[in-house]
Amino acid sequence: MTDLSTRTPVVARTRDELQVARAALGDGDVAVVMTMGALHEGHATLIRTARRRARHVIVTIFLNPLQFGPREDLSRYPRTFDADMEICRSAGVDLVFAPTPDVVYQDGDPGVRISAGPLGDVLEGQARPGHFDGMLTVVAKLLHLTRADSAYFGQKDAQQLLLIRRMVRDLDFPVDVVSVPTVREADGLAMSSRNTYLTQSDREVALCLSRALKAGAEAAPEGPSAIRRAARGVLVAEPLALIDYLVLVHPTTLEDVPEWYRGEALLAVAGRVGTTRLIDNLPIRVGPGGGALEVFSDVHAEPPAQD
Ligand code: AMP
Image 1: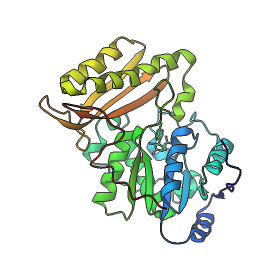
Image 2: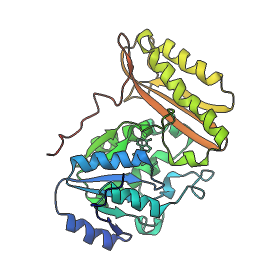
Image 3: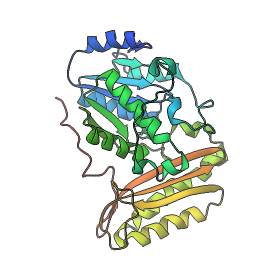
């Protein structure tokens, strides 16, 4: 329900406007939620989590050309700025930074970029060469421009989250990274701005991804091969989903876990349904008493909630 007491966020489109609006928030305890727009309940949950924990919340809305390949969906990506603003307003956002590419990349394509390294070449990185370098480069820039103390990211994009944590650690960014569990539709489909591309029948097909993850999680007590078998069983029953990968990997190395492995692992899937590439994942505890986790315990370093 919309809270009428919340104020319309300040909108900054230029660096100067951002600097003025950011200065007005003062120093300390400012959170940022970075998005590409077309906001949905997943984004709103990130914003509300940040809102509960930080004094001020900045949302960035920026469709970053650097992280899209030449044959990807940059030009058709949904743009819904007015609806996005309404979500930001009702979730209590203080400041929305919504620049155009020439504001972010003021000298054109940056010659110096962040390299994701080997973890950026596997899974999504294999399907989307250069994607993670482009993503990390804009995340680094937006962290600098917003001077945020904490940054909130969704578990939905598990490899992105891992790489951001690595960048922050490897390059000593002074920011707390907080992960938020994946928000799903009632039928299990992970929320995504790209779900708007799905036809009604595509949407039915797309459910096999989350169902496969769920089946895998249910087999978690039996070990890695049982998990992979259970998940694959669901996917092969849906030939209209063109699966790119289904993996059970270590949460920080992204390497396949061996059969003897017990502990936390990432069960991740990607595939094409109709014209749309979809990804989904579940953090899982493998072994006795195992099953689905919301987020990984060892990397889920949330700051204490504010009173
Ligand atoms: P995007 O606009 O797709 O770049 O996503 C912006 C942020 O929202 C990223 O941190 C995503 O991981 C997060 N996000 C997107 N979809 C979901 C979801 N269904 N549940 C939780 N977080 C999400």
